[in-house]
Length: 594
Ligand SMILES: Cc1cc2nc3c(=O)[nH]c(=O)nc-3n(C[C@H](O)[C@H](O)[C@H](O)COP(=O)(O)OP(=O)(O)OC[C@H]3O[C@@H](n4cnc5c(N)ncnc54)[C@H](O)[C@@H]3O)c2cc1C
Image 1 (tube, protein in one colour):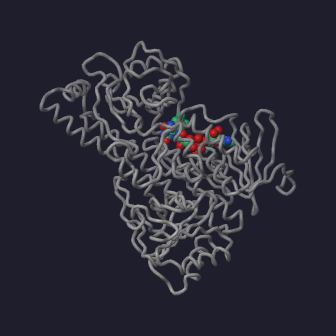
Image 2 (cartoon, helix red, strand yellow; image 1 turned 45 degrees about the horizontal axis):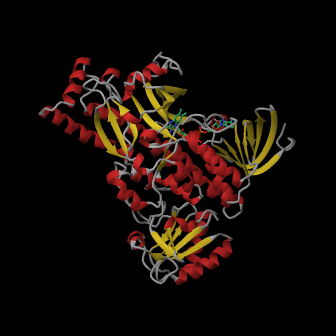
Image 3 (cartoon, rainbow, N blue to C red; image 1 turned 180 degrees about the vertical axis):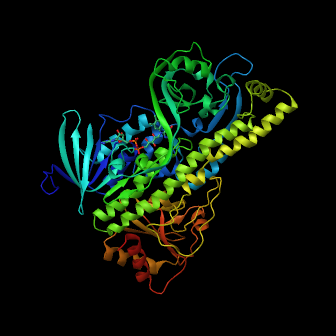
C-alpha cells in the first residue's frame, strides 16, 4: 500500500518514538516551542528501573530554561548529600580490613570544586534516578501537551517520502493499529526499533562486560556517610578490583537514610553465572558484609556494557537521539545527560523549520553538532571506566599480583607503617586522576560545536583542558554562552535566562550598541524571527551585577553577540561595523540556512 492510499488517523508535525528521558524532554521543549507533536511509548508506564541518576549542570540548565529545574531540585539529592565518592573495602564486617576507606574524592560540584561550579552556571548539578525523574517529566509534558503522550503505543514500522514519515503504531493493550503521518520523526527509542529499521550501524566496541544491577530496599544508615553519592567496593574477598561492585542511594530520602539503593556488579560477557532476585541476595550480603541486615530485592536487571555511536544521526526526515544514537559505560554519567542535551539541540531547529523560520538545511546541523559530541562522550565514558583499572594498579593490584600478594597489599595499605603511608600517598595521587569522572566540569559545560549552525569569526577557540576539568568560559561561536548574573527591572537573572523558553535568539550588545539594537528590530521583523535585545552595561536595560559579564564577553562595547535559542553562541562581532543591519541580517540568515 502506498503512503498516499493509506488511511491516516492522525497528522502531527513531529512524532517522538520513546518515552524515556530523551523523548519526554523532546516533548516538553517542543510544547514550549509551539510544535504539534505526538509521543509514543510502548510500555504502559515510565521506567521501572532506577537506571541513570546524575543530572549535570548543563542538563539542569536545559531543565531551568524549560521550567522543570525547580521541581527536580525540590525532590532531588541536595548537594551536601552528593558531594563525595568513596572507595571502601565493605560497609560492615568486623575483620581488620572491613569497613575501611581507601580514598574519597569531591564530586559533582561539591567540596573544593564548589566555587567553580557555582561561578560558571546558574544551576547546581542534581541527582534524581530515572525511576523517579521520568514520572516527573511525564507529568510536566502531559500538562503542556494534553493527550499527546500515548503510553502503551508501539512503533511497528514506518516509511518516509519527500514530505514526511508515515508510521504504523500499535495500541498494545487493544492490539489496534494507528497510522500517523508526521513531517519529522525523532527516534528516542534507545536504539530498539528506529535505527535498526533505517540500517544505521552502531560502530564501536560491543559486549565489553555484563552488568547486573540490583534495586533493593534496606536501612543502611549505620554504615553510610551522609555526603557520599557513590561507593565503590574494593574487597580482598571479591577479587580486589573495581569489579567488586558499586552502590548508589536511590532515595526518596537522601543521605544515610535513603530507603532504596542500587548495587552494580561487573561480569565477563562469557561468565556463566546467572543472577536473579533470589540468588543475588547472598552475593549482596557478602559484598557489603552485612549478613543479617533486612534487605528486600525489588528487581535485578542485566545489561551489556558497550561503547557505540550511530554512523548516522539523521536519515532523511528521521533523527536519532539519546541511547538510540550513543551507548556507553555509565561512568561520568553521560548517558541520560547527553540524551537530554540531544533533545535540546534538535527541538529548536525542528521548531524553526516547522514554523517556516528556517530552511530545512538547518536540520543537518543536528548531526554535525551532536554526533561529534556523541563521539567525544562515548570515548570519555570508556576512558573513565577503564581508568578504574588504573586505580587498581595505583593500589598495587594488577594481573601480575598473586592472591597472596594482593592480601599482603591490603594489609600494607592500611598499616601504620612508613610503607603504609607511602602506599596511601601513591594511591591518593592515582585516585585523583578519577577527577576525569567526578569533576568533569569542562567536559560537562565547556563542550562546543565546531561545524553546524554557527559562523566562525576566524579567532582560535580556547584549548580545552585534556583532563576535562578546567572550564574556560568563552563567547567563541559554537560554545555555550557563559553564565553571568545580570539585573533587569529589579530582578536578578542569568545571561542564560535571556533566551527564554520559546525559541528566541538573543542579541547581546554593550554600552555603545545602539546601531545593533536598531538593526535587530529591522532584521527580526524582516525575517519573522523572535530576537531578544539585551544591552548589558551601566545605564543599559541589563546591568552586569558583579562585573562577571564584562570579564567574559570577549567583545568590545561596540560589538555584538548572537545567541541561539539553545544558549550556544552562533555569531559574534568584536566591534562596530559600517552597516549593522546588513551584517546582522547576513549572520541570522546564515544561522537559519536562509
Ligand atoms: C539497567 C540500566 C542501568 C543504567 N544505569 C545508568 C547509570 O547509572 N548512569 C547512566 O548514565 N546511564 C545509565 N543507564 C543508561 C541510561 O539509562 C540511558 O542513557 C538513558 O535511559 C537514555 O535515555 P533515552 O530516553 O535515550 O533511552 P531509554 O531510556 O532507553 O528510553 C527509550 C524508550 O523507548 C521505548 N521504545 C523502544 N522501542 C519502542 C517502540 N518501537 N515504540 C515505542 N517505544 C519504544 C522504550 O520502551 C523506552 O522507554 C542505564 C541503563 C540501563 C538499561
